[in-house]
Every structure is written in structure tokens, then in C-alpha cells.
Length: 308
Image (cartoon, rainbow, N blue to C red; front, side, top):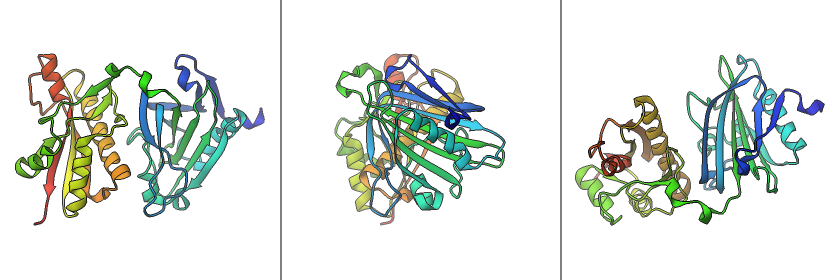
């Protein structure tokens, strides 16, 4: 029991696929995101050129925590979490710290919640990957700990096995296309300066991009690989339901998820892609009808630069 000091370990039965709940002692949860069927990058080794992080599929929960006043080291934050996982029967598959992980490059392989909910100091962070094969707990847990001048931070990602075919399709939002033919995308992008990525799917009200594949991303990626001078912005948009702040944050996170997929799966250079969100401020249809609101929920690609 001494090894569990400093950590609160709670069984949560409301979400059977995610039954193990790790909460750093004295922490405040800054954000939680869940999806019953998603895809997320889980690094299994330090960053190396040309080596992509492994991608896991299943029920995903991501949580960010703020704790302390910034005096705890990343190891002091990580150690009780690691001890609790080992006590619960998890095997530690991999662990590293900042520069040994790969610094900046490793950090941007991680699908973690962003600022201000989770802060990562690129010169002072730790990463841990643990696995367990059971029916009543997450089979993968990854943890990132870091700290800022005034607080410590922890990010816990859990992935549980799930039969994707059993997830009702109504849990996914399909973003409508300007054209149903993905090959028209580059014509619209170069001719009009922007285009809708029309076949993307997100969990309802969530930022996780479904597993795909998506013809629009394949087309965009193929074009970007042949145009190394091109820079594009991915811009998320929402309907007008909800607050301005919440919609802007959701739209930005969705755009970031698309950018991450282009980089991690298709090998697009990070310098070619930026992401942001406009919330409900740039509708393309009326928000009075459901069809209009559906059209307004979209991610667009905007051409920023292209050298001839």
C-alpha cells in the first residue's frame, strides 16, 4: 500500500470500457474528452527520423490535470501514477524523458489535449506507456507529465478494445462536401483558394477524427507531397448551437486533429500545415434548419502560399 501513496485509484463502472480511473492526488481536472470509437497515436519508442508513432483504435478517453504549485518535478508527478498502474497489473512498455524521448519531435507525435488545459515544457516532460489485457480495464494507458512556473500537469490517455462495427453510425457527424468527388478538391483549392474536406467524420460534439480512410485527405496529402512549397491552413467551423468560446475551441481541435492525421499518417511536413478554428462565425448556410447547420459543421483547407 505504500506504493500507492499520493495517488487516488478509483473504479469507474459508468463507462465499462474505461474502468480504471487514475487521478493525481490534489489535482484539478482541466478537461476530459471521450469517444466510443476513435484512432489515436501512442508512441512506443523514442522519436527517430522516418519512424511514425503507432496508431491505436478503440474507445478513447483523454484527461488533463493541473496540480501543485510548480514545485513538483515531472518524476514526482509520474512516479505514483506508474506505481498505481503496476499495482493494478499493468506492464510498463516504454518510458522516457524530454530530450531522450526526442524533444520537440516526440511531443508533436502525441495526440494530447492542448493549452491551456495541458501544458508541456519541451525541455521538461516525461512519458510512460503501460499495457494490460483484460475485459474490465483499459488495455493501453499513456501518461505525460510536465510543469510550468505555477503548476504541474499530467495528461492520461486510455484506449480500450472495442468492436468498431458495433458502434452506431449515428454517433458520427459527417461533414458535407462541396463536391462528392475528392479529385475536385485540388481544383477548388488552387482555383478558389479554399475547399471543404467533405468526407470527414467526428464523434458527435467531439474533436477526435474517425479512423477513415478519407478520400479528401488522401487527395490533399498527395498534392502537398508534390508541392513542397505549398502551405495550407485547416480551419474548423461549427453550427451556431452553443457558446462562442465552446464552438471556437471545438472547431480548432477538429482542425488540429486533421492536421495531425496529415502529418502522422501521410508524412506531410508539419511546416506545411497550420490549424485554427472559426467557430460559428463563417457560416455557409442558415443555422435555422438542420440541413443548414449540418453544412456549417465542416473543416476547410485554405491555400496560404504556393511558389510557381
